[in-house]
Amino acid sequence: MANNIPDDILKIQKKLASFEKDSRNYKKYTKILAKHIKKYTMKKRVTSHIKTIESVEKIYKENKFED
Figure 1: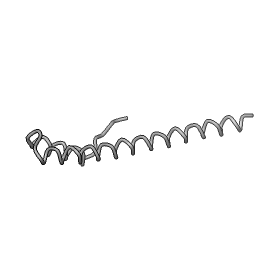
Figure 2: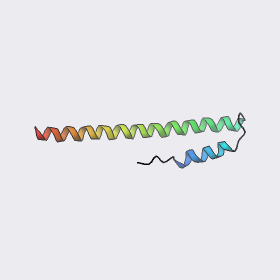
Figure 3: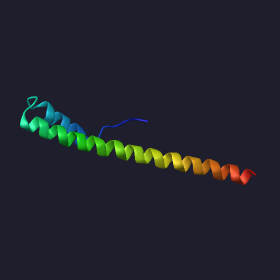
Figure 4: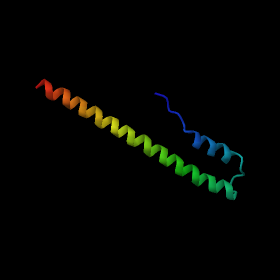
C-alpha cells in the first residue's frame, strides 16, 4: 500500500520553501499547511476505522454461520 501525499499539500510545501523563515507569508503558509495535513490525517484515520469495522463484521458473520 503506497502512501501518496496529496497534490495540495505538496504545492503548499513548495510555496513555503520559497519564503524566508519567520516572514509573514511563511507563518501564513505554515498555518495553511497544518490545516491541510490535519484534514488529510483525519481522513486517513476515518477510512482506517471503517475498514477495521468492516473486517470485524465480516469475521463475525463468518463465525456466526459456522455455529
